[in-house]
Amino acid sequence: MAIKMMEGKKGQDWINLVLAICLFISPWIIGFAAEANPAWNAWIAGIVLGALALATLSAFAEWEEWVNLVVGLWLIVSPWLLGFAANVNAMGTHVVLGVLVVAASVWAVWDYRHHPPAHA
Image 1 (tube, rainbow, N blue to C red):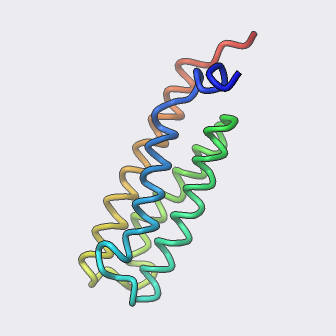
Image 2: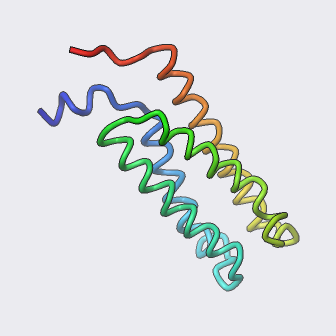
Image 3: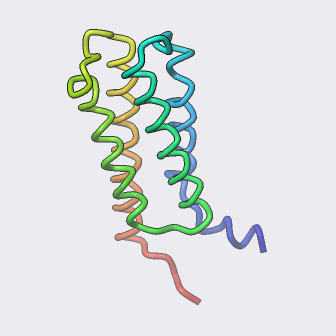
């Protein structure tokens, strides 16, 4: 039964989970954990993306991909809205991971709409 459940899973869900983990650990790895705005933004967005990825892996829902898209867009604009665009490492991390989240989400929605799952 576990194998049957995994048959319908998409690579995008796993990509989003990896991106969520990367985002969550980025303040320590990239070196901006001491700065509250970018660090907390990365931690909170990482938790949200990770929870959505795990939920999507257990039971796909298109709305979860749309929420991922919004979180990805938030990551792209948050350095300017939260005032940490001057920190090149934090800004670059947020923008790059945001673009990747947006791309994976758009890919997942496109794939779902063009290849709907077969219902038994």
